Length: 308
Ligand SMILES: Cc1cc2nc3c(=O)[nH]c(=O)nc-3n(C[C@H](O)[C@H](O)[C@H](O)COP(=O)(O)OP(=O)(O)OC[C@H]3O[C@@H](n4cnc5c(N)ncnc54)[C@H](O)[C@@H]3O)c2cc1C
Image (tube, rainbow, N blue to C red; front, side, top):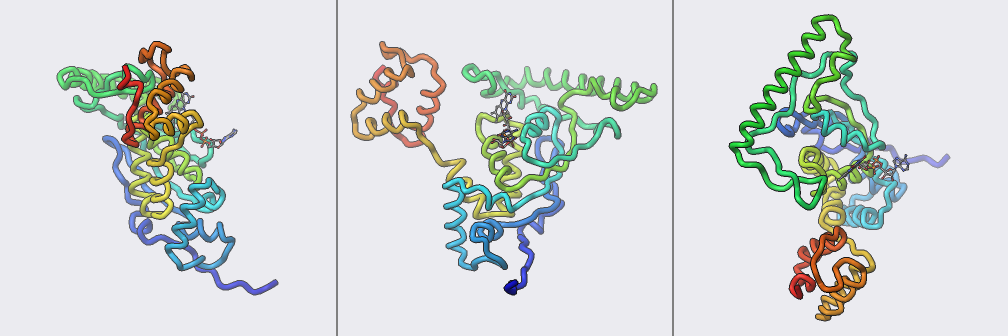
């Protein structure tokens, strides 16, 4: 076998400096990095199937990472892994755990007494049900209403904890005593995931349609941990996934008409595709609304609005 140059283990000083340091999230949650494997360099190394430190030409490495991300060449990103310790309310964890491509070990409330902390909502933090998005929220309730809701919330947390502890004191098994604890109760878990699937998680959970609570966790993972661990990957992810726009065939055609100043043609296409009533009346249409958001970002006119 041909001799190979000696290998130096890849490490990232910026992440080493915060290993084990909890980044606070919500009122009593946190995320901390426990361990990791790989770095920007490991992505490059895998892509080139090279050994040692890979190339030292930083600009070339950055370019390669951006190319891989842009073209969804995903396997080099799977060469990196990170293990996080998270403390998160159970309702948020319920969304988090849907991501099947991670390895998880969660605090057991069959084995141990449930963590005595519940996520509390401040008087100013009660969100209003969104009118147009059944899964979403928009704005906040007035603070006076919020104060009442927060007060009731504290009562509920106190009572549910008290009943839980009474059950334990009466000898009820922990696995059964826990059944009426609120979903706001904090849980803790170790969560290990490769970089490819972490980016998938972040793309879904940093996005505006994700619930605010899980968005807070995803944002901390991205901004505090991934940005230190793999800065070139993080930069490319922001550029291409978070801030990049994609267009369907129809959207591209509509944009071509708008850019050419053929606004009537654009409206005709929108009506033809059923995104708008034939009399030009604006009715709710999800795909059209999503396109309107893209046009706003591009600072292009939305002709069916102006034609109204
Ligand atoms: C805004 C938002 C709203 C949501 N609303 C709901 C809801 O109302 N109800 C609900 O139940 N869920 C809901 N979800 C959860 C969602 O449907 C996914 O379960 C969750 O986001 C995990 O995504 P994933 O499966 O892509 O991730 P992962 O489980 O991490 O999987 C990553 C990728 O691996 C592949 N993969 C993993 N496992 C399999 C498999 N068994 N077979 C084939 N391919 C696989 C897929 O390509 C998948 O995209 C919502 C998610 C978001 C972000």
